[in-house]
Image 1 (spheres, each protein chain N blue to C red):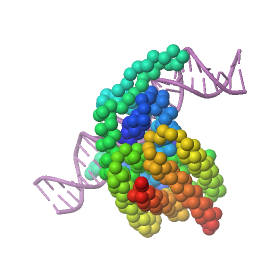
Image 2 (tube, rainbow over the protein chains, first blue to last red):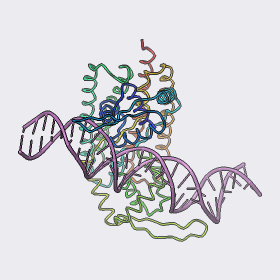
Image 3 (cartoon, each protein chain N blue to C red):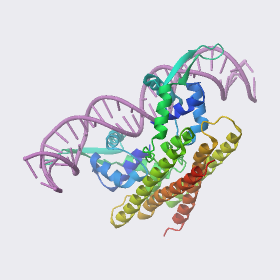
Image 4 (cartoon, chains in turn green, yellow, red, brown):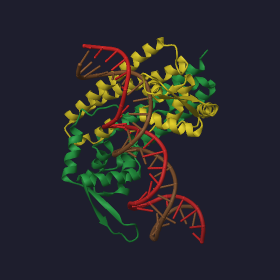
Length: 180
Length: 180
DNA sequence: TTAATCATGTAACACGTTACATGATTGC
DNA sequence: GCAATCATGTAACGTGTTACATGATTAA
């Protein structure tokens, strides 16, 4: 249920349309939670049914009309309930396409695996770069959903996660190279 | 599409029913790819339509009848194509419920966050333990989908991943404790 | 002035999860 | 001898992804 709660969290900042939320989400939460627009619209619908948010139609001339959402008292209560619940510390679901491929790679020449890993390494390096840039950028922006400290923990996580992966790739490539 | 390819990989080992595959999957690939039974049945259906596998009904008396799947020539070709494709080195999708919660945790007392992290730490320690035990176990079993080396890379990954998370938790808890 | 992008959103489909069904067999 | 688990699978529903729609504005 984290998507709903992420949206609630963002709505504590300010009222927003689905489109706004989608952008905001992209800039903040997407580093540890992927979600796309349609999904967000659907969740907002349901959240309104549940009474966590209310929406009102806003007519616009130059732009398409929009529906603006605001968090309700019930929504706020739900958000706090969620945040205080420390039991929900479950492992995130894991689906790692790289490991899947590598697992069966004894069936093909090791050059394929080495290239696979090296390509992935580049992806990691770039992604890490991006997170670091984003940290620098947001350092300057005033309005953050989280207080800076909490926000930093998640970016630290991301950076460290890429570092860990790069290290593992380097070790693994070395091992593959020295096979037989 | 990794699930289909995982199943193809397992089917190179031996013919299996959906039920068998589900068990096999659990013991081998589930460490880096979650999938449940129903999903596997559905994928097998589609894979048969695509001609990657063929199935035959097997009547049984003491047990429910079953449908046994075997990989075809086309399935094998597809598996090799997949394994040789080193461009598909995309970052796995990430949805991290822990980071989502932590991100907004400035809204609640820091004791909640500390407990959250410590609970999660325990989960990691246990999960890491399990992987290590599984490594020890499988060390003895003869039939592995991957050659031992390749299989080990993925378990190394898992262990290192838990270690990384535990380290990050410890640092983060320390930082939260020293806030303000 | 044409192509791209913005600002909004809907619709269709694919994938993932939970619950159920059923007759043996095994464990206590 | 009753409850749990095994060995098989189906059905229903919920979540995630991709594609499309549309009129305004900006970039080249």
